[in-house]
Length: 136
Figure (cartoon, rainbow, N blue to C red):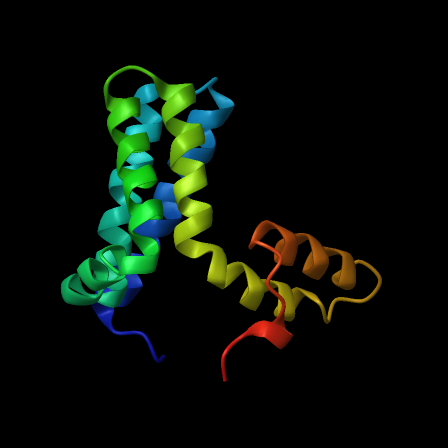
């Protein structure tokens, strides 16, 4: 396998974080589940790409708006404003990880029948960027 042991554990943490976030939304924005999901996601991301790359990712100039929104959302969730915090956090996630949506869309574009629709939707969510506009 191409993943190290730390990266495998990081994937498990990120998956658990996603499940907790999903559960928090299903439980009408339960503050504890949303907070645990955020913590697990951040620990998992750090284990997958490393501490230095995580800090570099969140502190890049073009990602500062997304980082501020993501951190503000987490703080609002912890300060008992889970719905508002989650929505602000979701906005930050789209800014931070919007570039990955294009990659997922290109992969999903190969799915018969619904693939092109998924690709178009993900490119729209990513801000209208298409694969023709990506730097080479």
